[in-house]
Image 1: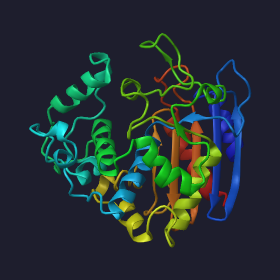
Image 2: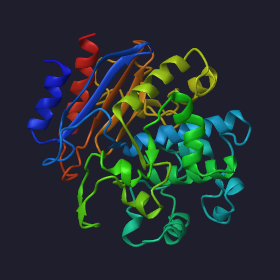
Image 3: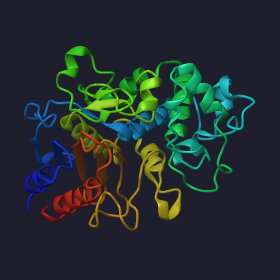
Length: 341
């Protein structure tokens, strides 16, 4: 079974209406394409269509933060209270950039703050007052809330908005001309549908799926970016090249960023590593593999040993987030992509 057949089977099983993929090396694409439609009753997918990248936003924002580190604007030990006065006097004032990037901050994850806090101001107040679940450094707990705070630290250190920082330090140098926060009306016509959202009362198209990100205005470090399969492939190639030469960061900085610093749970600085069992990157990639998944059904992984990048973009939350089939599809996708190479 090839990748097109595998992903077509996933659509036939109702896991998503659309899928786009690219697998390649630093030199170019080895396999790529699209299948399906932008929504179940929509037009055929093309390679220029925009997917909600969801948490693939996290390491992209992380790359911008590490670029600021290289400029001396922050360090991994810089604290939230030091850079963002709003958090001074709270139990989060002493959290470091490292804590937040490794998801070891103790800030609870996956908290639906939007339900009771419909404005940016009230949500940030709730974020400041959200009690830590444990002491920093005790354990890994995946936390989008922590990444929101990291984005605020980056904005303060860089004296610019997060979307401008991502553009300056990541998308522009990587040649990612089709990756953006808050797609314009003109760009929304090529956005892939996500959930039929009860909170919004409609199928979401061209607006970030993550509800907390919606309340924050659509620009955040945990979610909000939209991009095409070709742009994510460009990032994959840039990261492969950056292992040996400066593209986005110095190779030394990138090596620190992707190193597993949390043991079996395999976390780098905003990157996922390869889990020993059940990795979304499958069974055949090497132990140095790094990348990230997104809740909407997206992922980017890079295997330095193989010299390969793997991009898979789907809308597995369309029309509902309740499906579970994407986990098996992701693993099979990477296994086929490696095994056929």
